[in-house]
Image (tube, rainbow, N blue to C red; front, side):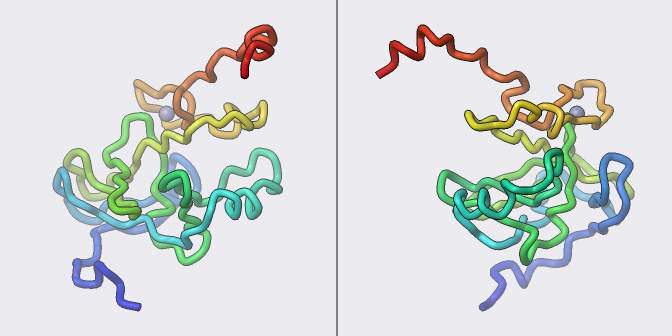
Length: 170
Ligand SMILES: [Zn+2]
């Protein structure tokens, strides 16, 4: 199988220990604003398969490398993933994740200087079946001035629907 972006030059990045969390991805050269840095690669699986693989992990273990592409597809970068899986979350990031034709890319949203850590806002979507400790599991400690304290989106859980209201549902 040919790699669609084999012609592109290797991105100026390296993986090493991060002050934010575990391993991180750092610029080894200046990166222009708007540059497409790296594709988020991995095995493409269904949501059901992602649940099957990771729902039984230890509570508090959020070190999976899943990226939700759409309602059908999740990329599991734990299988055949590349450097992109190590890009950490920040509430004031210098990159963004862009989904195009079912593929996911990490693009720079401002100039990134050599040595700077690459980050994007994970915006992990809340789900109805989230465990009660979800906010602890995905707590953010990015330390930025505008840190919202969570990698989840929206930042606060929606107010629980009252029993009465639920009972009236169809
Ligand atoms: Zn933060």
